[in-house]
Image (tube, rainbow, N blue to C red; front, side, top):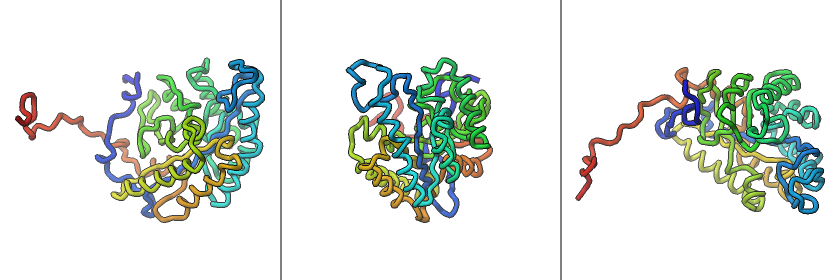
Length: 320
């Protein structure tokens, strides 16, 4: 089986050609909140920076100001966000480096106690192409999350969404059941791997506080405005009964700071407690998807198009 490129792992299938993928109770949209908690190792260059490294020296170690910027998220801002999620009775997905279980166990404990699920996110915050033995690291993360939670993790999101040609094969081999790196659809889809099917549940680029607030430089109001607008459009898109998934993702050191966190509340006020939407973890999305997915896989396979032959516009056949 040739699986060299992403296009070998799934077929092109327009969402308009698919039969309905129904949600329970007539809901139209699944809202999937994700909170990314990472371990930035002080003895290494920081994965991101808010200010120039000390003295202007690239990759300075130790980089106290940028390490502390991120560390505030785990010491303070996460708990501010968690309180808001608890007020709305929402369980999110905790996207975490495997080493977070040992570096910040109180965070993991609080999430497990509130029925959040754990999504593997590397061992430390380092993109997979830079990991010397990626396969070994993936198995290590799976094992640590399983030991800590008492059950195997279902999902994976690569740091920076980065993969190599073999990543999804190793994820399936280790025991992961879904991957979120493939942000190419509004529904879960099946990926072919050398170890069976791996489900792709779409994460987000558009509703990512890192991209929107740090890279694009928007104010936090734009984050909530965009999430609300996206939700409303997906509700309209799902009017035919074919559901959609909307992920929005946050990093505590970004969205959880005092001047931004109120916009998390705005989003939850808009999407919670309404009959046309459910707010689920990634594991809940996976369980639902597996219960409604046809045995033949999703999206359903269709013959490739051969072109329109009825319009009389072949070579030399256009209007004159």
